[in-house]
Length: 248
Image 1 (cartoon, rainbow, N blue to C red):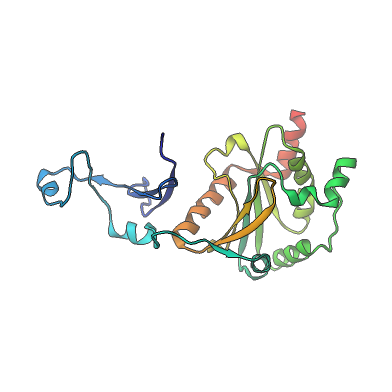
Image 2: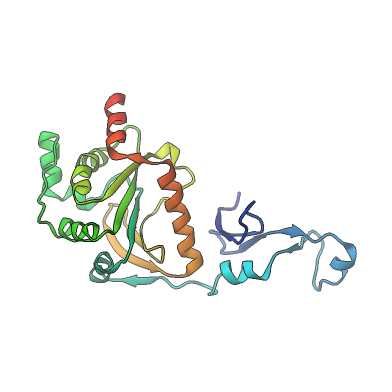
């Protein structure tokens, strides 16, 4: 069975080599670099066995991108701590949404109204809109990319309709078809100021049950790379809504 390799990072500005990858199954680190092939060099290596290979990489690669802990212990925070991140970020807050539905949406009276009428209402005095409106009014950037199925689920159609309310308070809402998101992780997260990542953990019934904070620079950069890739391929929600309508 092929390994499940995740790109960890590189110091290269040109071709991506040398670089590190992580085996998500075993936790092993895969080092990508220039092969050491000179027999005199190989003869100096201790414990070098048959079938093994040696590569040469800059020290900075391991310092900047190598794991800092043998096993990372998740930093779980409560809901109040998570919510404060939206009040204290300085520049940007961005989310990737990957699920086909969320239990919280299905429990929302606005969702029931959408099922009945095809249009979702909005209360502009809801705490979320008040907080985000204040942040965007202050010049900060808030956005998200939502991955949608073809055809979209009912919950995804609800959020697509609801996106106009998010946009009204300054959120940049974009969409990406799941078929075009093959290289992106299947996890939801927020990234704040390219410095703090909050990974959202759900159960099988789509209930959000825990928040995990990540601040290790190499890990944060990995999520920033995901954000940049998603933003590059995603389209504004108005354009996406037109695509959905055309496909019906």
